[in-house]
Image 1 (tube, helix red, strand yellow):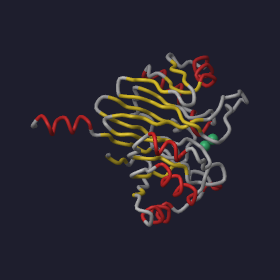
Image 2 (cartoon, helix red, strand yellow):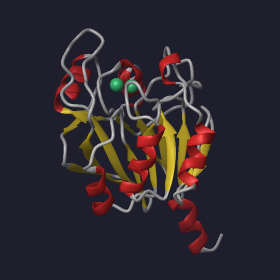
Image 3 (tube, rainbow, N blue to C red):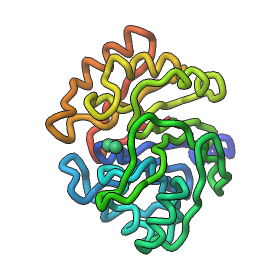
Length: 236
Ligand code: NI
Ligand code: MN
């Protein structure tokens, strides 16, 4: 393979969707897992072949962090989350933690992770306070990916659009617990996102949405919407 093509292949970034808000970002030997929720997730595929090098968790609700400790124990991958969640998950057996908080960034072998605001709540299933919920912006393989976590629409998404050139925004569209499709279209515009992957919908009855309709609404404002089923992936 010519060096330029080889470099391109090495730099390619693949998003593997695992259902709900659970996805992986693969680039070269790097595998970034965000919001691992396989156990008890009616929309998920199997966790058997998931071997993350880093685990990012947006907030403490079970539909985002259920399998974080199991995966961390299996692969020795560090868990990246806010301080409160890191302490809790460490006590539960996660071998390595990389705490951070809103507005901060950390360097990793694959690139950089920024922690963003998210308007939501955050406590573990046993009632333990999980700190403030968050989203992440991941710079990897020359691409910039925003995972909003669970959040309503907020005006500072415009600021994120100003600060980052977002190649893919993973936005919740389920409504009820997060923003719905109409607000997610507005979010995509404010973020200046090139592509949008809808997340956090159809997993449970209160968050049923029509992903095709959402993609059509995005297309009408010049943004590409790509809905994936668990086990499917897209390349950036
Ligand atoms: Ni939540
Ligand atoms: Mn959730």
